[in-house]
Image (cartoon, rainbow, N blue to C red; front, side):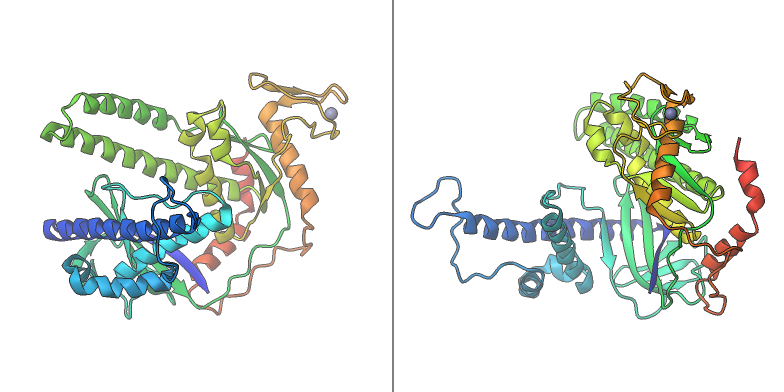
Length: 423
Ligand SMILES: [Zn+2]
């Protein structure tokens, strides 16, 4: 089963917008209510049986079952009988709220951190219609249950053979910009890309946005710092306004809209860079560094500004879509090893930008060296399949993956691009 998300901008009328904001608020309250129950139950089970505790006061009857997804879904039907707010919303949407909480809860159990949190006002920004019997899009409108027909910018068609499975409505910039994220599905299997051909290693850093093992550099986009400073100005203006006043509201909206614009620009930059890299190789290796951890360290905010985590996710997706092999490799000591002779050269300070090997004399820039180390590690970890000529998955007969097909055959014909992209 092949699942993809296509995002479209939607333009709800003023009434629809108000209704959708109301739904979001109700969903938020429902989410918090379910989380409250979950927390209470957990706290009550931590409570000592034989003594009173001042801290853990929620003693519940031991018969009360754990508020699991099914249990809370059952409760929801009860609540709906008395609560007109819940009743006003499409029932599958409310059920999905409960599911969302339990997804977070399961993820917390699996990782051991990130306990679900209460959502503050305005922090619940999307809801999902999980099922559609027929295609909700007709011409330039999308038909949403209980909301009605909403204008949509249908800028790219859904590929043949795909069905709309669900629609997530997303609110951005304080509820002034709306998107519909269509989950589309097709009943085919697209094989995962196999390792073969030319590989590159990618070092993601701060000085350059990234450097590949071919010493191909991508500099951070310039418009970005320009927008960033404009954002700072707006933020400064906004915080001088009297809180909750009309002018404050206006200023906040300006900040939110610019912020949204920046994140769109960033995502676009990441996509373009991913495609640029896919043009250059058949296998792409990246270090498996946890950017959130490094963001806590001295590199701090710069790391998060770069959005490296998002970039790696998008790169992985782009690689898959274009049939390129993608793998993460161990990130430890990538900057301390000589790519030529594999010898430890010792720790480099952050300010040290050049790699000079005392053993073999290999000299290059620091990030290029670690890019090559990453490539070496990647090549060690895979057994490239030798298929001589580039073999394309022969799924021309399957409708629906036409788009992927097109991408994959285009790559096969575009060896010339490699030369163009390299400096
Ligand atoms: Zn060396």
